[in-house]
Length: 632
Image (cartoon, rainbow, N blue to C red):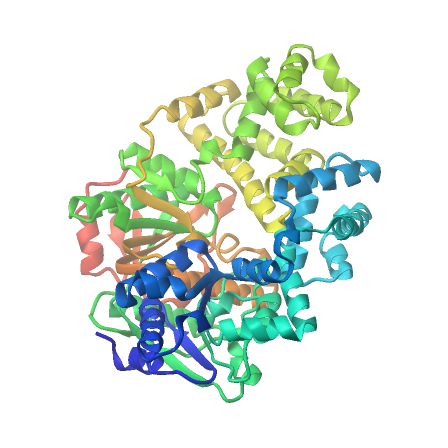
């Protein structure tokens, strides 16, 4: 059964249309039913195309369509991602002459050029490859690429030019070339453009708010004179500008297609009224937004805003409340703990393990298993003469040292002095040994200073390599290293006289807990939660500087994207939503996120001396108060 808003979209046939689809409004169902109606009314399925961003989403659409029109008809509809569509356009034109350079081969070519240009070893092939990839996806020219990655110059543009020339000479395309090359082909070959515009006569684009300029150009070229495009999306959920997406494309759809019809799907089938009202109270603070009223079908309480005294207290609250939900019958896979960055997960993971609550880190691994964290852990172990740990570090940080050579170098460190990266590693290890004489909070502070000392010359190049050159991802990995310092501070509180060796032992023993199960409580970033829904949601770490990040507060556009990300997090919840913060961080007092002040909700404070208190303590808070006293 379709509601009137959905039915209006399903019945749209000719000309451009924009569908503003709020969270939980059934947009996929609507798109699939519209496609089925077109087929049932005689439109050739081979003239219908559905374009989305992920293979998973494309597969889901194809499967749903098959249920409505049958497998045979569904397979005739072009259901594709942008890159698959671009590759098909190119293969149609060039056939077997199309040669794709895979990522590993491209990295080897870039490595050769870096070496020939005499670039420093800390400028890794993966980092350069990542920078070039981002530039192409964002549509940057060479000067923008150079300014965005000034610290890689002059080698970045030198290698970029040689890499592009190499591909031209050899007839290669890499993954990031597909869109741009398809656009160029369609722009300059009217015959091919005519063939493809007939294949995409009825074009539907999902998640339109996430499109970038190259994708938009491709769509325009695929449209025939009838301009039968239906763009489906929600500007209030545009959260990928860092990947090159331009949310203005959906806000300016009527400018690009003046005769477009605009439809709105505002009925939220996912969340109750308390959650939708909270979401709207936040997004109204954005200047660039879509005023889409979310109409919930059932009542429910506003979210509970919980302020703990410490970060560990926040984590224990989450574990206790999750335990309560599980005991009341909520399946573990229906509980999600969302955060701005997985760097915040350590204390949450520790609390869940303490209460033996199974969990899985979606889109990542447990905190201590993350590559950059394992690197630091191995460095600290190696500072005590652990040869196996040193072998791992050498293999990861010294170019040209595979497992065998790294093992030899670990046994005879003189070998490391012969290469600049090896000599640098020995310096880092020597300085790490100075941590051995510290205890408790003095150790935590000394470790933080040690990290800062080697950030630029040692850690950052490695993190950029792990992050494939994406600066924001490298900063997230750096935040994980800073979180190790926070773990040391927590260790110091529990063990004031503990030294580094005891800390390493403590971490090692903490990993002996049973492995997290896939069906457990979900820990994930807000970006990873997009498109998902859960009975109970915890949105944690709501402090200024973490969410929104300090960097985002410097620019209005960035701050508004952070607010959209918060909006996405709120609207993942079906029944219960907790928004949590804490008053005292490892570095001193914290300020609650400005988003907490904007969102409608009930306030709950906890203090070990007086229990729960606050003017807005309600039935929801009172039910939580029945939980056994927390050991904050």
